[in-house]
Length: 173
View (tube, rainbow, N blue to C red):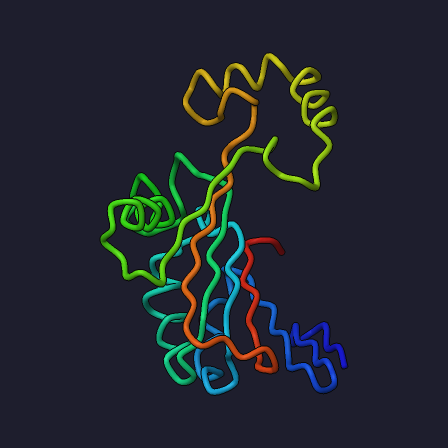
């Protein structure tokens, strides 16, 4: 079953996938009983502090749900009304690294060259094609030496249920 207008996909015997954009994150309220977990994509580029603290985390309490919060890095603003720099995503990463989060919070990071799906020659070709822009961005602190931002993922795992519902949150429209 797929309902494009409601952004819902039901898989017989497998659960339901709810897709929400950062602009409609408040629609997660009230569906907590149906959530086993949440995936937040590009979390450094949306108001993650509001989304996590005020909407998603409370919704996950019903089932002790899990969350995967992932993103490419963001050296600038994250959409938070307080115009915080660094982004709340980066704050969470720093807290995990400093041991300020519980043991069920884990942080992973790597460069584009660490991604086993991407062909290193394609990454290099992209760098070579846009070398000047990549160098300018790198000189401004936005990219690594390979011309790409690191990708980072934090994971909070709390009794995941493989047959439960999930929410995918993305800033893409």
